[in-house]
Length: 299
Image 1 (cartoon, rainbow, N blue to C red):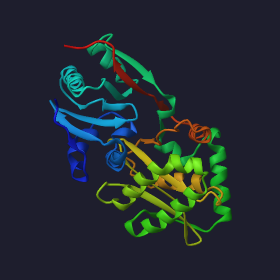
Image 2: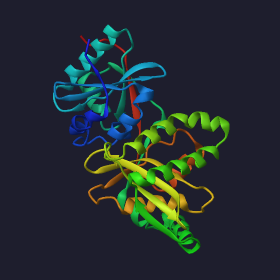
Image 3: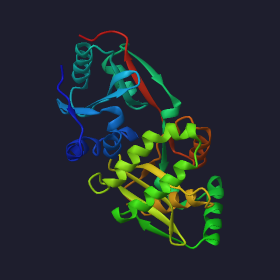
């Protein structure tokens, strides 16, 4: 049985020594996400033969993330399957994308069933496209921004610890605007976001705040997936202020370091309006993520 350890803030440098130098773009590997959601997923981790291995609990039981690193992946996968047997749970592995699925099939042909849930696909955008909003397909976004600038006196500020209390106040206002059913579904997100905001510096989070007439109208934050892809973890705005979402999105991306060629804006969770909004920004890729389940044992 593999000895895993609980994930804590102090593990950031070790975990990022794998994730930040990987080509993988999925938001599940962002340390800020791993740490701020561990209350829900009970995430544990270890190092094995040159790989970072993450294990977590879902509604259906324990599962593994596709290991990150370099070396003999087939051996590591076989060890994870043995761990699942010894722990008495089925082997399931998350975080498999279109570019990694062929590698796994080549290593272990016909051993896995792959399934996909479109609701959990990540939306990947060109940073330049989100920053400039050029082209006919993004004309409506430029119109929203121009209307916002004509209607409001505003200021964009970097997110800092002293602004967190006001951001949390805006989040509470946003939360109350949802129905009771929606609020129940949003409680976990609320807890994760609050944790992240209260540990900005230790999580290496970068964020931005949009102030309208002296009050925070929107805020957002995120963290790197790797050296070229930045993940937007949270984006909240006062819906009574027209164009606030469009404006904070654009301003935040413009202020990010230019090393980030791509922006991951995470999943739509099957929410119709959110899906339409994400598609309207013209993603360069909808990163589908597969789950692998074992068909036969590997000895």
